Length: 287
Image (cartoon, rainbow, N blue to C red):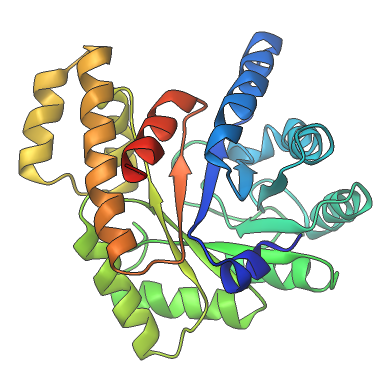
């Protein structure tokens, strides 16, 4: 099923979950258990990241196929152009099509070393080019990333939102945002997007974290602002997993309630391959 149809046809908020491809067999078996546990919250779809430099390209394909074939849930692989030629990407996309995958999250991706991104010879430079490539197959529903606080490489939020419009104009159907901790960033981002003519669904990305230390590192890498009161609580939680998980769930529940009250079409959870926080968040939202 095309994910874009879910946002237009569903009478309920669309709940989706994101995972990364494990590097070990044990991690993979644990992930399958996570898939099963999360079915209790009736997710509309699962997405799976691609990995820096395309390092998990094949595992990502195998996992999304298993999600659809064995778990009966719509799946969406991420696709980046880092380290790949357009020819490689075309072959990969064709393989996804042949295996029954109907959705792709088209991304540029980040350089594996964290430095400046440069395409390889024969490669693509922008996410909009990845969108055009996927759209040329006339088969997929295409999602793209949004950055409520602006992409680290953009000079302004206005420039970043224009880049988002370029991706949508190239053929993308919906937007899933990077995680953030202050909903005002999301509301301002959506308002700016609507002002320049973006009318596609924009889905907030929420991270119900289990490790404050871990997510603080993520936030620093992504240039994500952590409000002072939350930061103080994160620092206080430190390496205490129980305390961090409780804080992460409480933060996510607060954000989700405000977002749902504002009428967002869905919420995308960054699970970090852990089912417990997301299940707890949905449970509290339903009470």
